[in-house]
Image 1 (cartoon, one colour):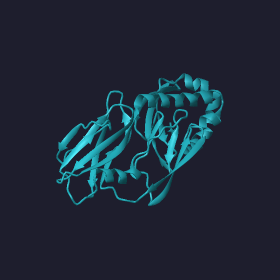
Image 2 (spheres, one colour; image 1 turned 180 degrees about the vertical axis):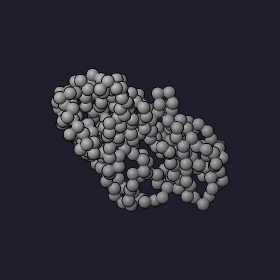
Image 3 (cartoon, one colour; image 1 turned 90 degrees about the vertical axis):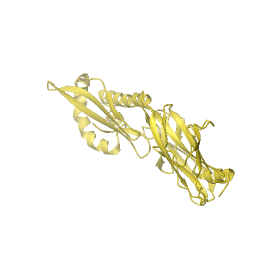
Image 4 (cartoon, helix red, strand yellow; image 1 turned 120 degrees about the vertical axis):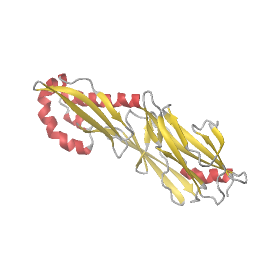
Amino acid sequence: MADTGDAEKSLKPQRPLYPHVQGPPNIGITVNGIAASVQGNMFLANHVPLTVGSNTLTVTATTLQGQTATTSVTLTSTGTTAPLTLEATPDSGIRGEFAPLPVTFTYHLTSASPAQMLAMDFDGDGSFEFTDAPPDTVLSGGYSTPGIQIARLQVTDPQGLVTTAEVGILVQDVVAMDVMFKGMWESINTALLASDKAAALSLLTPRAREVFDPVFDALLPHMADVVATFTAFQGVNVTSSYAEYALNATINGENRLFLIYFLKDADGVWRLEAM
């Protein structure tokens, strides 16, 4: 069994990436084509696949309007299987306005020597929330602070050898996301009021553009009257991959409820999917 230092070395190729990104709101990030989770100016990608030897990680940033920027970094993986791995479920998600993000952790120890004690540092601040816990301890916590948190687990075997593993959790802020979605909806209406159909369509997913292209043509002459009937745009449900909003509008004297859906696209950018 490897000691703590060797364990940390073998874990390095699989540790989360949490660099910074600068750009407009609702910027999408992919790492080797895998959508990362973004909160503010930070992003996180856990368990990016690596091969033995030299690996190039290509990070692509995409704006809502389709502008892209790419950078790459090369690293070397020994291919050594880590003696201890730690998984977070989920590894990204939304903290509510008054509720933390619940996360459950599971670990896998490949050593022939069994675990005897566990110690867990849920936020990576160097202070363990518990130590000397039995190996079947349920590992779970709630995260209230938006940003990246690094959970760290230490496993001690009967011989006193310690192995460490860690995993990143990205906590997103539902209040900030609400501002983003309401801003996108306002931008769509503003573009249509200005008869700028192209600008409105750019805020939709590719599939939604095909559906709403002719619909917008029909609505453009009447958009001022249509928007005047809208009630407040309110969130119904927000997750890390889709969001549901609702509003009421009066049509032919009848009050109707309309649901609007946003989807996190393959490039990591949020766009309107249906309404």
